[in-house]
Length: 299
Image 1: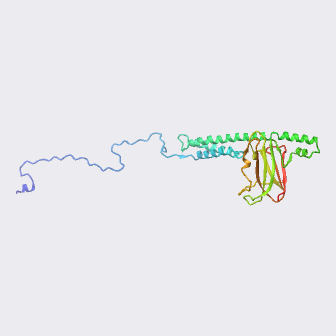
Image 2: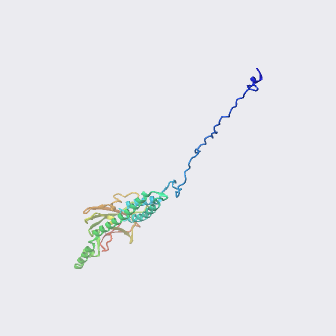
């Protein structure tokens, strides 16, 4: 074997084959995670766009507060006397509701517009119901006490005709011992006796009243009458019991009774000492001087 064959070369003088280089493919770059392909069109910002559009909006605290006050106001608006608080809550809740409406308007930074609208509606409703209930209560009082003045004038006329009649004299002064009429209400002071201690450990007296509603509408004892107890010329505070004494019902004075019905109501008072207790019952908002009273010596 000659050298040309050993090394695989062409013999000297023989024609040589010319090899042209083959076209090479462009090297491919490894894909980078998250990289966009070539010639990608990038989104352009929209003129006038809000960069905070994608930020979640928070719930309006004013709308929530107004809604809560509106609910409480509607509940309290049906309760006499207490509905004065409901009216105040309604005003405050209405302010919160309006603030919530402004904060949740279209394009605002807060959500909860529906809550704000509900808050405004409920607070206005609470105030309207309060005014209607107060007007109805006032009318009921006027109906219950409308004849008090006439009764007092008739009693005074009878006293002038017979100055020697002690009962006529008592009627003229408006004082009725233990039992009598207060306009269209008939009231009797049934009893007054020492009772258990109140929540603060103070001694009490439990006074029982019996009254009849002779009006043509439902009445409530605590609204239609003013029942008080005195010692040494000073009005006694009403007792609050942790353990109710026998026969005591704290809700009786707040219950309505229908025309012609009779009810017994017990009220506790905190005693100052062992001196006599003067019990007086008069008609609410009645300035004629008519009352039922009695003095009790406590044992």
